[in-house]
Image (cartoon, rainbow, N blue to C red):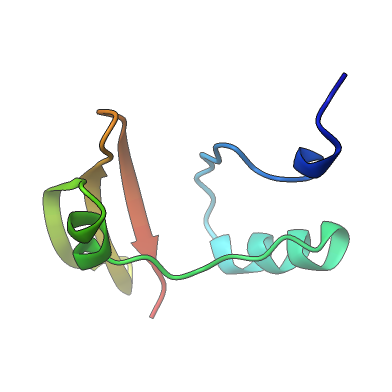
Length: 79
């Protein structure tokens, strides 16, 4: 049986769309999900590695990180 405390929580999210802010707002309105800004500095502080330093991309900032388990993720922050 599923743990009732985990219903509706995202364990991993990977989606590439043209208007991520609109999609974020959609899911916030529909199911109450929220998002938080992330930073490369926080990644390092938490034991991760920054593979690609933050750089400008599509009007925002992006970087690629590796978490302590070795999983690699791209992070994008809108302006």
